[in-house]
Image 1 (cartoon, rainbow over the protein chains, first blue to last red):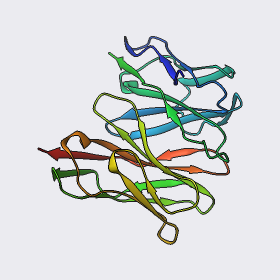
Image 2 (image 1 turned 135 degrees about the vertical axis):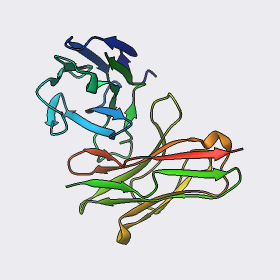
Image 3 (image 1 turned 90 degrees about the vertical axis):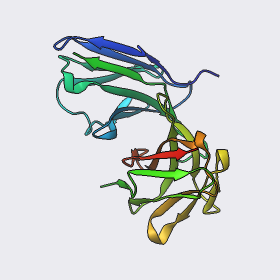
Image 4 (image 1 turned 180 degrees about the vertical axis):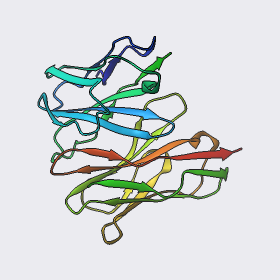
Length: 116
Length: 113
């Protein structure tokens, strides 16, 4: 059974370029989360979706960041324009609804972004 | 607002020592509690979770955690650590109402052989 799939695994880009990170959640999961991990700030929740609808985007750092979930099997996180301080590991995660006993959130392997 | 606090930022132990990592959360409603582990260079993996029932939860690799509702705590324990337990450990709380999952700052555990 495939887990959460993220791409690219690693990306190095120049400041000012657009970066698009992709995520395919586990089939059937209702929730999708985007997290950012840095040494300074740890794991931050950027945004999460329920049934493809953004529920809480209060963690998105600024207007340069945007996320979409056009269908149940795909989501993107876009940074435009990118800046060196965006360098981090971006994790996508998915789960069923919290009320079920199988509500564990499963994480992808992360997209390691370096902006130079 | 929902928040999670981990007491220790960096813990260094010798092999066979006992481990306890503190975790407190602030949220008044129904919560599900998790401990995740992240080995160097890897993604987050679930160690254990509390959903309901017995507040003492056993997870993989000999880890356990106890949910104490009155203290809003969910501390992680292991009686005897191994070098391979060297990793970063994250406590997380998920709201039963909103589905939102929030992580603590993480605790880096270093086990000396």
